[in-house]
Length: 98
Image (cartoon, rainbow, N blue to C red; front, side):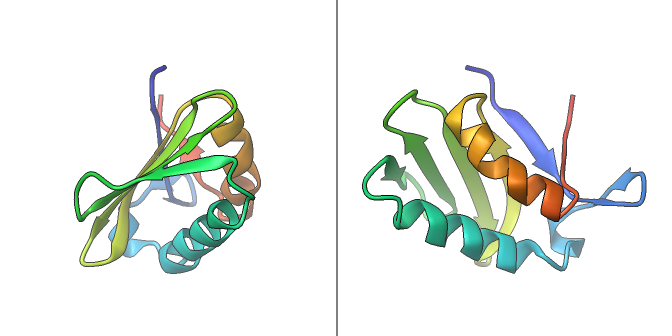
C-alpha cells in the first residue's frame, strides 16, 4: 500500500508541522486512542524518531515521524488507519497531499 502524506494547512496553503499549533495535541490524541484500542493496533518503533501503528485487521498503518518529540510528518495507508485518522483530519483541517 502506498502511504499518503497528511499535512496541516493555513487557509489554502500547507504549512510545516513545526508551525502547526495543534501538533502536540493531535499526536497525543492519536497515541491515546490507538494504545487503548484493546490490541487492535500493533505498535512498532524502529528508530527513536518514528512510530508506526499497524491495524491487526487490514495491515493499514499510521506512521508518525518526530523531531525533538514534536510531530514533523504524518503518513497513513488506506484502510482502517485512514478511517481512524479521518475525524482528526476534519477537526484539525489536515489535508492529503496528492
